Amino acid sequence: MDIYSFPPIAAILDAAYTGLMQLAALLEPLTGGAAAAASVLLVTLLVRAVLVPAGVSQAKAEQTRSRLAPKLRALQKRHGRDRERLQRETMKLYSDERTSPFAGCLPLLAQAPVIAVVYALFAYPTIAGHANGLLAEQLIGVPLGTSLVGAIASGTATAATFAVFGCLIAVIVIAAEITRRAFRPPAAVDADASPLAGPGMLRTMGALQFSTAVVALFVPLAAALYLATTVVWTLVQRMILRRRYPLATP
Image (cartoon, rainbow, N blue to C red; front, side, top):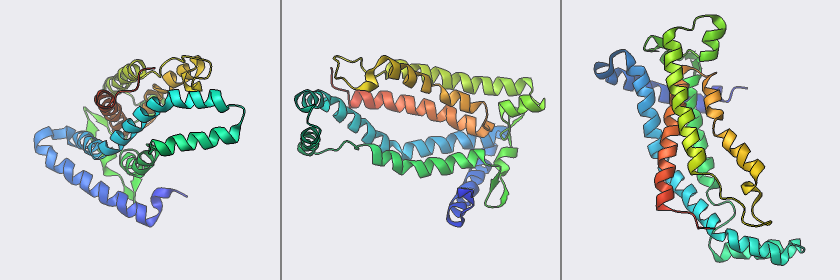
């Protein structure tokens, strides 16, 4: 069953769609034929702005984890052979610090439904039983419902198709590379350091940064525009928050 066909969710999605199309109509005098694409960009920015508090919570949680990491390693060395004692001491440490191992997870889960609804606006051909008119609009002659892989497979890809998708994918790849370099987890300082800092995990996490670029090859242009805007916003937001909430130096 398609979750977006569930009546309450379909109603929310349809209301969001109506607002999106009204926004496109308002932008048309300023942006002309690119009004629909401009509305995608603007809605994405507005949604990311609303979700800033969730990003702040995650940044604070990441800072707390980095501060507690040496204490957790010390507990592992001291009680590593007594798993029950280690668990008690670990939970006591979190309690004394007034935090938990899951700090930052709740804001991440809370924003998931919002992101799912917004993404569906830009990717689903049908909304609440009617056609998604947004995907019939164009950007530089390329329909917002066109995917790069689909256009190539059907033989309908044009120079404009390659140019538009090429620019968006380049933006995503550049943002991913900057993210990979700027937010690489610190190297392990001893044998008991977190496995997240191991060489294999570092390579895997680095590769995952580029998965969005692969996804952008297959989704409609509207969704690809959303993805490119999101990764750039996320990069800038993380850089600002990292300065505001720096990690503890190993």
